[in-house]
Length: 203
Image 1: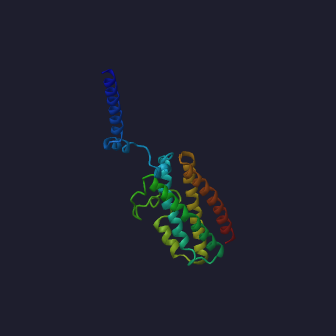
Image 2 (image 1 turned 135 degrees about the horizontal axis):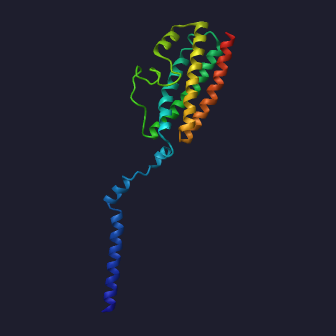
Image 3 (image 1 turned 60 degrees about the vertical axis):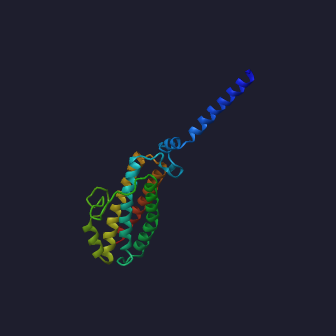
């Protein structure tokens, strides 16, 4: 009799344990774990970024985009091979950086804020170094030496604005990759400013 009771007790304990295990694998349990805030493997880059990192990328993308627009004007308007070469190098450097920052924003789940050309940050002076619509129209209308001087002067201002934004990212940002890009922008664009100042001095 005792043996029968003992076996029955073991069977009951086993049933309880099996029930507990199966409850952990139930849809409701899985739903609860799915709703937890733990990041998915594809969003690991989201860890370690803050609002300043997001602002840096969201502002630097249109800032770089305007530099690309300015660079595209050069081949058909400039008469200086050095200016043409510089514009090409600026475009080749900044286009991949735009793609990189857009990738971060996608990973961070933020993206770019909805903007029209007229409402783009910087057109109203909200971002340092951005040219106004009138500035760009004057640049588009210029040719030859006049264009070169105007383009170099505007691009120096544009680069300085990017450097200021990058310095803010270095001091306030939290994402290591974003801060590394900020340092790269500072180093590259400061060197280009020095180069452009030299070209202005020769004209």
